Length: 185
Image 1 (cartoon, rainbow, N blue to C red):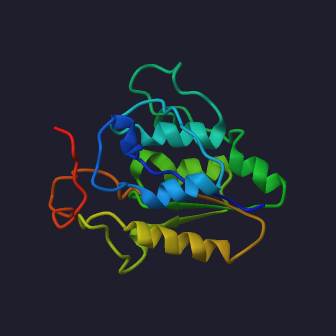
Image 2 (spheres, one colour):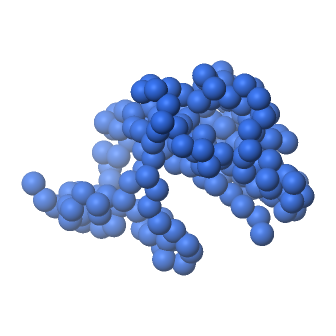
Image 3 (cartoon, rainbow, N blue to C red):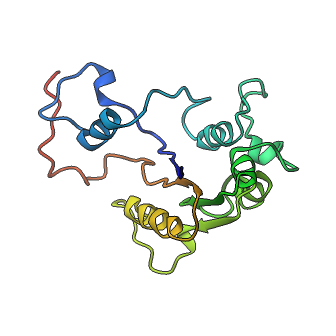
């Protein structure tokens, strides 16, 4: 079994807001959820806490008991930790992280090695990488292409991808031409 974790920051099911829409805002995700296992995740924070969510997903450790404002990657990860990449590597998996954030964010360059990733693909370091609609982050398509490329290298594989293109602001005009509307006041 190959495993891909695609951690999308700032994603929620719009239906949870209780509004009606002219069409389903996330039809592809909903179709995938109908065909595969899925559920809801409870994350340790909000507004810039993606590194803590990532830490919890990759280690199984909880950051809720740390002092408020803590970021384990920056403050506490100083040595090898039990982690999903280490466990899967022990079972013969090739482990790859695909990261759209800058290399220096949250100390990931050092931490990914301590978590057991064989390889890290830093999307921002790829010359001419396709950019998201707002221009400064690598696009989701670039992240997906990197996943496909990494999946060709070895079997079985574990890929952790953090696309980062869902960061705001969301009011810069990309969706002006959309026919999707909220029907409720």
